[in-house]
Length: 355
Image 1 (spheres, rainbow, N blue to C red):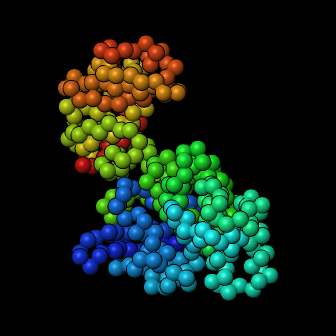
Image 2 (cartoon, rainbow, N blue to C red):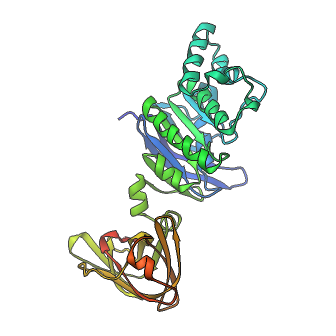
Image 3 (cartoon, rainbow, N blue to C red):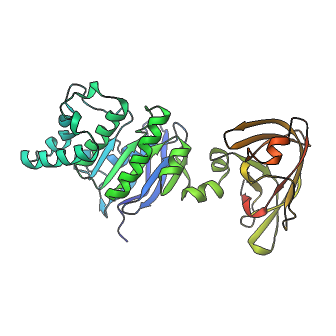
């Protein structure tokens, strides 16, 4: 199969021996929206810059549409890159900024005007075409940056935290526009972000990175509900992680581990020794589900925010865990600090992983 983008054991080691990215493998199909997610310094932006050609790779190969472009100069790669600071020319007009990439390609004037006019219309920027970029709002500048990246018709659009400078409301608006735009154009997007909600809400697949290493590559739902490593379990969502010892296999594809709170069952593989329980998977009270996990504790605090109730429960050994429930539920309404609670957990919502 021919992939739009393929990374084969791509790595980056700096002259002082610092490993920024280690043996990164990835295959991206045409029209996919892939997000690189991780904390600052994990190697996600370095990987994006290697794909763009702005950073030399130390080992491995980068292929676009089956062609090895590992050492091809940036201007000869079929990619466009959009940066967090937009990198616009402040005293150029909107039209001149958008046309810049076409000028570099020395495109004929009439064809260039046609392409720029079309993308100005697509981004609702026609009325601002003759204004300078420094006279426009953050949202408008973001649209200019996107338009400039797309007007050259790249095979792959690379986006390095492009929404980071926007306020929360504008960020949500541009997120929606970005997903619709990507779906309409069918262009492959590779998107770097440190915001979980952005990665999970926009992408088809998420690559979670830590210390230059790929921890997990999954669809957003699978990443959230079935973390594969302790790092992902701690980084994504709000999970309780309980360590134990590997136990026996059970019916229904479940595995069991022995923990300080008794045996716990969940979805995992032989040898797993950690249980990962999402905060929203806890139930207040038991429902007699086969194999149900039960934890006893007292309410340490409660906070109702919109439709979600955040309840902190102190277990018998003093450990505090987070529970999320519907704010309108009888339990969320009636519970107060100091109340005794029993937390039930269906084993099918528990993921067992290896330490």
